[in-house]
Amino acid sequence: MSHIASRLSAVKPSASMAVSQAAKDLAATGVDVIDLGLGEPDFPAPAHITEATFAAARKERMLYTASLGTAELRKAIVAKFKRENGLDYAIDEIAVANGAKQIIFNALMATLEEGDEAILPAPYFVSYPEMVKLFGGVPVTPACPAENGFRLTPEVLAAALTDKTRWLFLNMPGNPSGAVYTEAQLKALGAVLAKYPKVMILSDEIYEHILFDGRSFVSFGAACPELRDRSLIVNGMSKAYAMTGWRVGYAAGPRDLIKAMATIQSQSCTSVSAPAQIAARAALEGPQDCVAEFRTAFERRRNLVVEGIAKINALRLDPPEGAFYAYIGCAALIGAKTPAGKTLDDDVAVAKYLLDEGHVAAVPGTAYGLSPFFRISTATSDGVLAEAVRRIGEAVSKLEF
Image (cartoon, rainbow, N blue to C red; front, side):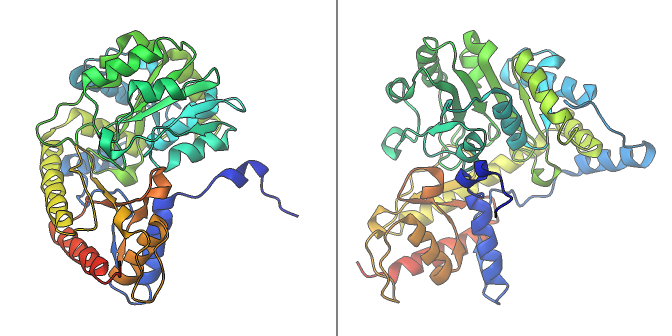
């Protein structure tokens, strides 16, 4: 007899974490593996952030904080939204949680009823559909192909909306595609959503500072202020400040939703750890030079990978507009035979082949709802990326078409 709740039967573990673990398992046998499965900057957190945290820990008692975060941190987040996004929020419209994923988890727990639908434009972040299913929701995943820049169009959105739609998720720049929306494109989506007053919008903007080719970021909240009372703007410290392990995410949204999320958090993890909140405040209020430095490095790495993949005839990579991933089209590899005589039937088989033959860990596009692709993280060093691209090219050259 199983003691596990039936609701977990529809939920899969994180695909990117699974790929990373497979890479670790192979490396444990002595194989030199390049793990590009996880989206984790290779930079240390900036020194002024860690020093501020250490200094506070030495002189203060680290006690419980308010469930939604300290007043000092939430004031810093209010100031960030005003300064960087042109958005005006009050402190009681701000939530702080253990990473952006917990923000999303809390929001869905607070709002989803059995059978409610959430529109997740594909390709989507791997955790979105699993969290929706965990609360009895139904993921609706309209395809947003490379030909459309991996962006949701008003026509596709209109076709996906029903009387059961509860949420629309947007992620910009997108993981895994790097897609960025212009203000005009967001306004066009907003015009469709205006006809569906029950639909809430979750705009995941955690990669907002990682933009390439001179692009400027526009928050959904700034583009569609008329939808403010049903928009949740999600962000966090992990990507812009290389603070993945500190686990601090935050959001701005309607007071009633933020209050409900506070209730959930108070009865689960209580709050984000006090030292991590001090670090987040130091990041938001301190020097911002590190953000620009990281972005410059990520753009250089993007260019390196784009140029390298372009030399592999069977693969396709349109230059990502932001974030630090390469979502590589591998349609030409489907049906090819490996040196061992196995046929690559789908992008899952392609990713496994790249790990087994090229010793490069990548996540199959199936995990993101749009195939055939595979995703690699470009958030590691130039040298590692150059070697990874070389290995991918060598593995592809061994296939029989």
